[in-house]
Length: 231
Ligand code: DX5
Ligand code: ZN
Image (cartoon, rainbow, N blue to C red):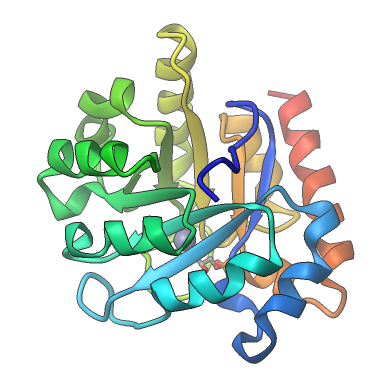
């Protein structure tokens, strides 16, 4: 399973967040959007780092046979070190831990040793300087565009300044790094995020809560492409 790769770094990626899907029919929901999406974003909430609980490795394992997408697991957890191995074994391809958790260098090493693609996330109020020291050691930087914990919140436009700064750092340093945004991404905000420099777009409500999720994913991709072409 770990051989599923993330594709070309820096390419536009639409990553639907299963948090907004029907958990009772998850495999079907994921299959429905397969043709128009690139990665699958798996939101893991521990009820401690964020005031909500969601899913864990057993769900990743159950879903694995139904999808050959790159599983992009966003760990909103206070102690990700206790669960990284279980995620790797259950079929996660990449894991993203939050910089707010601390001991980031150790977590990065642990993810590498497990063969995971390495992601680092930062909340909207984290300064760019909090993630800057790690940019050369990670594969993905996730800049949250909402405070994590719940789907369906409004995009925080102020984060775009940090996205633009990250994009410059990536381009100037020729870093092999994907830049992901997550929270409140829809057809209106996707081009704002891509024109600021994001290349991976996570969307929950704007895909799975729509009457036609496949069509919604197509519209989102088109909107995101518009943003990329006028940056
Ligand atoms: C927020 C999660 C997001 C969320 C996005 O805590 O990390 O991935 O599911 O949902 P929407 O797209 O509805 O804002
Ligand atoms: Zn997420």
